[in-house]
Length: 254
Image (tube, rainbow, N blue to C red; front, side):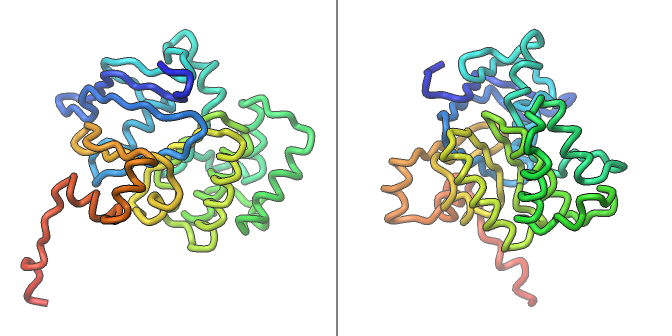
């Protein structure tokens, strides 16, 4: 694994019973980059995020974080530097929003000094400050997603994994998420983003990988993307690689 890589994945296999979801997957993610992972539904994106966060086991292969192999022995140490926003977000329903933030940050051993002020500041930025003392089970899908994002940021991770972070979130909050992502990148945080909103991925991410049928079928680094962008949009590149076929004739009756 190179010193310039935050994450290195070698020969990763993950299956559910007889269904192989990730098939000898190899992937390297540069340090301090905003990395985009795109693919159609069922490609294995959420499964890969689940494996990388330690929520899912895997069958074969190797995962390295900053040159440390991800094993049972050092799982706790590595996970303490990783935060995530999953789809759907994992939240404790009977906690209030601020209780959840405090609880998670305590697990991550975040310095308590100034934490509440930072939490309220971020909640205000995402317009969920009024829900600070509201039970999570009463929040809308968008507010839950924003709470998960705020909490993940406050843990001060080295690696932040965002699985469909913009789903169910309003346009203004998406722009504010992008602002925070850029600020974190400036601080050297490595981020992985999965999203079906290709325009956001195209404008926000450095390198982009296309995952299809459990394999990386294309890797577009910043240099190759510049040359491709002169002739093709990410939509066009995506459609070419995953062989998306037009089916307009099926709805001709409309």
